[in-house]
Amino acid sequence: MTMAEEPRKIEDMTFKEASVELEQIVRSLESGELELEESLERYSRGVELLKSLRERLASAEQKVRVLLDATDEGAATTDTSSAPSTAYLNE
Image 1 (cartoon, rainbow, N blue to C red):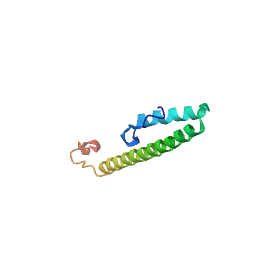
Image 2 (cartoon, helix red, strand yellow):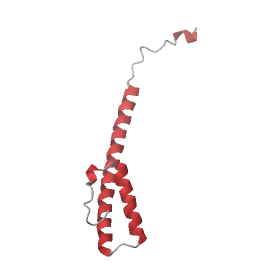
Image 3 (cartoon, helix red, strand yellow):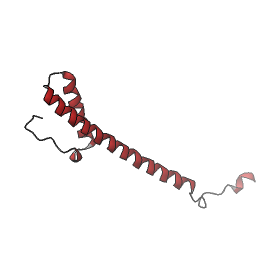
Image 4 (cartoon, rainbow, N blue to C red):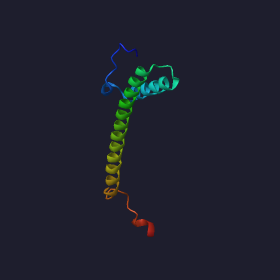
């Protein structure tokens, strides 16, 4: 991305796209070849990307917890009346 290009809105990016862009930013900053101003711009963009990625990950983790809790509750209250009888086992 050149300075003339407007960066893509983070909320319009997929998780993977944001991750890839963040990785590219980290590599460019680590290279040490950027001017100070460009480094600051990229660092700022990286912070925004990282914040978004962390929020998305936290949201996904919460959804998984809710689904697991629902599964656990369903398992604990499962109706076993249709299960095969085991009464004959002691005969």
